[in-house]
Each structure stands twice: as structure tokens, then as C-alpha cells.
Length: 262
Image (cartoon, rainbow, N blue to C red; front, top):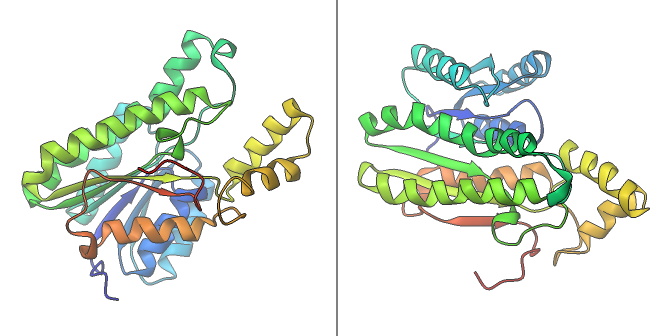
């Protein structure tokens, strides 16, 4: 299937590792030029080299997405280099695990900056260019927690729900500009983040990290965790011309973890 992504330009947030990296690589496989960013310059350089081996251009810009001035610099430099941004994939790290009384007001502010404000910053800077093009794709990586809150992840549950509200609102507002906005909701996917989460939560529950991961795998219908590549394939489809009538949706990639009808 020709996804007609050759020659498109995509900016992928938090793309030096995990789901962001997998998405950047999958887009490059389809001929998309990619802008990658994260706070880790060394990892960014390695991912950039990996992407360029696929025959597409890659611009790597160290960026803290919680800092609006750095997001402005990221987008300005990207437009100067490529002249356009066709696809925006918002992504960020996850906040710490814990329950409501474990966190201070400052912890909440940091989580909101990390998950919600970073997404707002990227959209605020990139949407005007998409409006001028009268075309664009915005795909926001959130979590299945927007459909089914996850115990012990209250910071993530709340802040990612805000991202879902933003996505639905923007899909309504910018449909007239042929800008499609969707969210993708990963379940337990075998990333460094999930492995770290297994370590922190298993200690509280008296389990080994491997037992924690096995327990998560048994929560979904397939009995295994997704790979980052399986997740990235769905994002690439949403970025493509083949998804031309999908907007305002929330698609979980969770192996059947969420049990609700919708």
C-alpha cells in the first residue's frame, strides 16, 4: 500500500527513545523527512544517523518541550530548514508513579507542564503553518488511561486526559482547514519507560520487575506487551493520505486491555 508519505515532513516529540523513536523511524521508512527532538543530545545524534541511513533527511534539535522558548526555537529552525511541517506527532515522557497524596502542588505543576503544556506549545507554534498549507496531520501520543485510568498513575491519568480534550477541541476547530487531529493510546508497550515503571511499582508490591511485566501482559486479550514498532505502524497510518477521513478519534493500541465498548 502506498501511504503517499514520501516527501512529507514530520516533527516527532521526545524521539530519542521509546515510542517517539519508533515513530520517527517508521515514518522515515515511508520516505518522510523527520525532525527529532529531546533533551538528550547524544541519543538524538544516534537516532539521526539511524534515520539518515534509510535515505531520508533528519534534523535533530536538542529541546526541552516543557520550555516554550525552546519549542519556538525548534519550530523556527525546522521551518527554516524544510520550509514546512506536514505532520506533528506530540509525545513526552511520563510523570512519576504514585497516588494522590504522594504528590505536592509542584509535582502537579511539573506533570501538567510535561504532558499537557508541551503539547499545547507544539500545537500553538505549528498549527499556523498547517493553516497556511490548508493541510496537516496532528497525532497526539497519550495513554489508555484517557479511557480507563490506571492505578498508581494519577498524574498521568489526569494530565493525559487534558491532552485528549485538547485533541477533540482542535479536531472540531481545524477540520475546515483539512487538519486532522487524533490521539493514539498505547497500553503496556515494551519500552524503557515501561521497564522502569515495572521496577518502581514492583518494589511497592513485593514483586520482581519481570513478574510485574508478566502481570501487565495478562491484562490484555493477546497476553503479551506490544512492541514499539506495532504502535508506530498505527501512527504512520494516521499520518498518511489513507486516513483522510479520520479526525477527533482516540485509538487504543493495547491488545484489548481496555474492556469498554467505546
